[in-house]
Length: 168
Image (cartoon, rainbow, N blue to C red; front, side):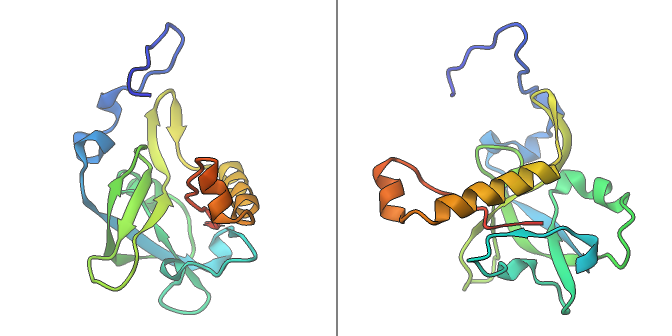
């Protein structure tokens, strides 16, 4: 909530922890780094009723492509991922309500925008904002359950679903 008061013991978001170029309230637009690696270097969680999103396909079969928040590139460079290689950026992004939830689009026309919850290797609001395995599992599981409910029923209840059908 925008008018929320902070009490002693709360973990406020300290604006200094995220550079202004990446704060949602500044409405920045930036290129999204991307690498690809063999599928065995990832864990994939997916709603079995949904196809793999097109943007996760690597340049060859047997690879996944992974989108990375610009502030977390060094985190992924430090990981020992066999066969990983960085790609030329294909997508632009802007943060939504959160620093790590991004609206992503290809500047070439023809594809609809999509959302990505990216790891943000920074302390924001008292927590390191890397996306953890249990968060991915929970998000994809809950999305899979909600995706089974007709959209009109969700809308009648005031629920607008940002479907997390796949997590990598």
